[in-house]
Image (tube, rainbow, N blue to C red):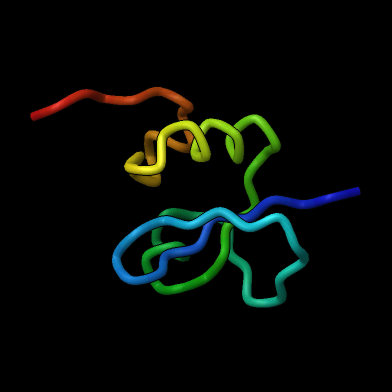
Length: 66
């Protein structure tokens, strides 16, 4: 079964679909450079919304401009 992860790179989220070792489960883990496992739906939400924040990806809902 394929797993999907969200990691922070160059101050931007990137989503990968390969097995990773350095993983976490919270936004703080993500901010500290660990990969956070996400669902296939969250992975494709990010692919369709590449500027989405961590929270927007997790909630699968864009918050809009500020």
